[in-house]
Length: 331
Image (tube, rainbow, N blue to C red; front, top):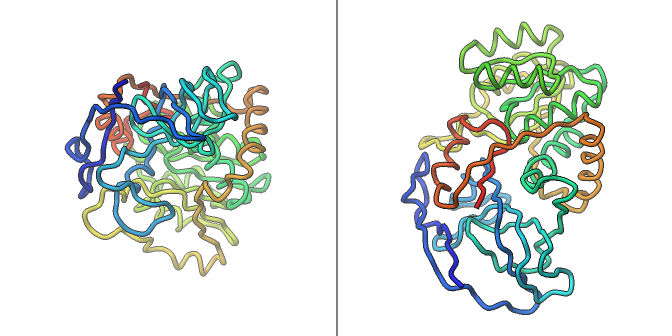
């Protein structure tokens, strides 16, 4: 059986380009003991993938040149040399950008397509949802009545952060690009305010929508937006650093916060969150979020693009703000 795979062939400088990967067709490897063959159905496309392409120390090993591009995915078990999985099971794991994955059984988790559509296990019930849940609740520590601001608020993580903050009784303001996204945050997800960073001044928007200041800022963007919010934080504010998508394709040094002394003045805390640190608690979080979905308190939106061959162009949608909801590639 043949397998189509996207192999990392070069380390990007700045914005990735199609030639940084090579689309190869190869023969399937034989299954070893405790390995499973999975037919990949959907792949999760996430901003973190840009960081995985860089050489250097990080929270996870970089993808090596010549290796299949790393990506989370869901698919169907075709063959199994593990007592934990049978053909026909649906699973979630780091399947990679390919049609079929031969993967160790301990890297897979069963999912139930009868409980939720498969793409949902890559969004609100997958890594982005877990990032939002643990980043906000364990690091942001929101209290009822506080003001929570979220950047990239219409993205896979941001939409979940804002809705959980609402569930916890907070006032929520999202920063997103474009009127359509801002309308969605307010009209569909129940945000209290939205700032369109593409067509309005963020500082003015923060003054308008956060007259009492900001208690929790969940940041996915970094750069100028982080700087703007730092000028509005309250005493003992918590800033959650989840990502910095505005900086990932820089060819110069990452732009750090110029207004960081606001942390000192306000005795505030800025802390990073890496979702993998909470892996042993994923099950508990998924059960609670599934309950919120069933109650209509937590909504999800997936942006699905079809075709493995379209991987490079689809990934770049993230850095142009072209996706609306969780970006998923249907293999």
